[in-house]
Amino acid sequence: MLLRLLKSKLHLAAVTQTELEYHGSITIDRDLMDAVGLLPYEQVLIANCANGARGETYVIEGERGSRTIQMNGALARMAQCGDRIIILAFAYAEPKETASFHPRVAILDEHNRIIEQFEGSVH
Image (cartoon, rainbow, N blue to C red; front, side, top):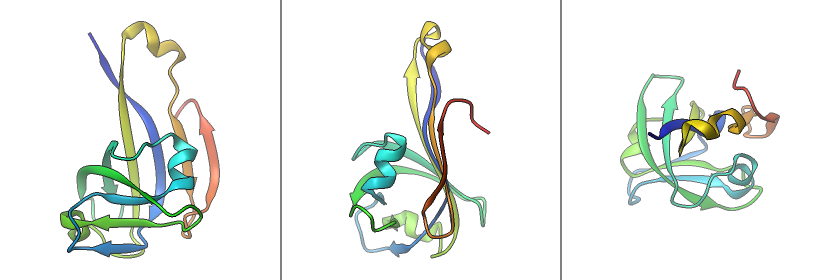
Protein backbone atom coordinates (compact mmCIF):
# COMPACT_ATOMS: atom_id res chain seq x y z
CA MET A 1 0.00 0.00 0.00
CA LEU A 2 1.17 3.52 -0.77
CA LEU A 3 0.20 6.59 1.22
CA ARG A 4 -0.08 10.05 -0.34
CA LEU A 5 1.78 12.61 1.80
CA LEU A 6 2.45 16.32 1.54
CA LYS A 7 5.87 16.80 -0.11
CA SER A 8 6.08 20.54 -0.84
CA LYS A 9 4.10 23.61 0.20
CA LEU A 10 4.28 27.29 -0.70
CA HIS A 11 1.96 28.92 1.84
CA LEU A 12 0.26 32.26 1.14
CA ALA A 13 1.95 32.92 -2.19
CA ALA A 14 0.63 36.09 -3.82
CA VAL A 15 -0.57 35.82 -7.41
CA THR A 16 1.50 38.27 -9.47
CA GLN A 17 -0.04 37.71 -12.88
CA THR A 18 -2.75 35.79 -14.72
CA GLU A 19 -2.58 34.73 -18.38
CA LEU A 20 -5.84 33.29 -19.67
CA GLU A 21 -4.54 32.74 -23.22
CA TYR A 22 -1.77 30.40 -22.07
CA HIS A 23 -1.97 26.60 -22.43
CA GLY A 24 -2.32 26.00 -18.70
CA SER A 25 -0.10 25.54 -15.66
CA ILE A 26 1.29 27.79 -12.94
CA THR A 27 4.57 29.64 -13.39
CA ILE A 28 6.65 29.81 -10.20
CA ASP A 29 9.95 31.60 -9.54
CA ARG A 30 12.66 28.90 -9.69
CA ASP A 31 14.09 30.05 -6.35
CA LEU A 32 10.73 29.37 -4.70
CA MET A 33 10.52 26.00 -6.44
CA ASP A 34 13.95 25.04 -5.14
CA ALA A 35 13.09 26.18 -1.62
CA VAL A 36 10.40 23.49 -1.32
CA GLY A 37 11.66 20.93 -3.83
CA LEU A 38 9.16 21.50 -6.65
CA LEU A 39 10.15 20.25 -10.10
CA PRO A 40 9.21 21.54 -13.54
CA TYR A 41 6.02 19.79 -14.76
CA GLU A 42 5.26 18.44 -11.28
CA GLN A 43 1.55 18.21 -10.50
CA VAL A 44 0.31 20.65 -7.86
CA LEU A 45 -2.92 21.45 -6.09
CA ILE A 46 -3.69 25.14 -5.68
CA ALA A 47 -6.08 26.55 -3.08
CA ASN A 48 -7.13 30.19 -3.26
CA CYS A 49 -7.51 31.70 0.22
CA ALA A 50 -9.58 34.62 -1.13
CA ASN A 51 -12.41 32.62 -2.69
CA GLY A 52 -11.97 28.98 -1.69
CA ALA A 53 -11.40 27.79 -5.26
CA ARG A 54 -9.15 24.78 -5.77
CA GLY A 55 -7.51 23.48 -8.91
CA GLU A 56 -4.80 21.13 -10.15
CA THR A 57 -2.17 21.80 -12.76
CA TYR A 58 1.57 21.45 -13.34
CA VAL A 59 4.51 23.72 -12.57
CA ILE A 60 6.42 25.77 -15.13
CA GLU A 61 9.75 27.24 -14.06
CA GLY A 62 9.77 31.02 -13.77
CA GLU A 63 12.73 33.36 -13.77
CA ARG A 64 14.91 33.13 -10.66
CA GLY A 65 14.46 36.04 -8.29
CA SER A 66 11.34 37.31 -10.07
CA ARG A 67 8.98 36.21 -7.25
CA THR A 68 6.53 35.26 -10.01
CA ILE A 69 3.40 33.30 -9.22
CA GLN A 70 1.45 33.33 -12.50
CA MET A 71 -1.82 31.48 -13.02
CA ASN A 72 -2.10 30.32 -16.62
CA GLY A 73 -4.92 29.08 -18.84
CA ALA A 74 -8.14 28.04 -17.10
CA LEU A 75 -6.54 28.63 -13.69
CA ALA A 76 -6.33 32.33 -14.56
CA ARG A 77 -10.10 32.41 -13.89
CA MET A 78 -9.49 31.03 -10.40
CA ALA A 79 -7.53 33.98 -9.01
CA GLN A 80 -6.82 37.66 -9.35
CA CYS A 81 -3.51 39.42 -8.91
CA GLY A 82 -2.85 39.83 -5.22
CA ASP A 83 -4.90 36.80 -4.14
CA ARG A 84 -3.05 34.63 -1.64
CA ILE A 85 -2.84 30.97 -2.60
CA ILE A 86 -1.44 27.75 -1.19
CA ILE A 87 0.52 25.53 -3.59
CA LEU A 88 0.76 21.87 -2.55
CA ALA A 89 2.59 18.89 -4.05
CA PHE A 90 2.24 15.34 -2.83
CA ALA A 91 4.35 12.18 -2.99
CA TYR A 92 3.63 8.52 -2.48
CA ALA A 93 5.45 6.61 0.25
CA GLU A 94 5.39 3.15 1.73
CA PRO A 95 4.07 3.10 5.33
CA LYS A 96 7.57 2.25 6.63
CA GLU A 97 8.94 5.43 4.97
CA THR A 98 6.53 7.76 6.76
CA ALA A 99 8.49 7.95 10.02
CA SER A 100 11.35 9.76 8.29
CA PHE A 101 9.27 11.61 5.70
CA HIS A 102 9.00 15.40 6.14
CA PRO A 103 7.45 18.00 3.84
CA ARG A 104 9.38 21.09 2.78
CA VAL A 105 7.39 24.25 3.53
CA ALA A 106 7.94 27.93 2.82
CA ILE A 107 5.65 30.65 4.13
CA LEU A 108 5.65 33.76 1.97
CA ASP A 109 4.84 37.41 2.54
CA GLU A 110 2.70 39.53 0.21
CA HIS A 111 5.75 40.07 -2.07
CA ASN A 112 6.54 36.33 -2.30
CA ARG A 113 9.58 36.62 -0.08
CA ILE A 114 10.18 33.64 2.18
CA ILE A 115 9.52 34.67 5.78
CA GLU A 116 9.68 31.18 7.28
CA GLN A 117 11.01 27.91 5.93
CA PHE A 118 11.14 24.47 7.48
CA GLU A 119 11.23 20.78 6.84
CA GLY A 120 9.22 18.74 9.25
CA SER A 121 5.88 19.01 10.97
CA VAL A 122 3.38 21.21 9.21
CA HIS A 123 1.78 24.02 11.21
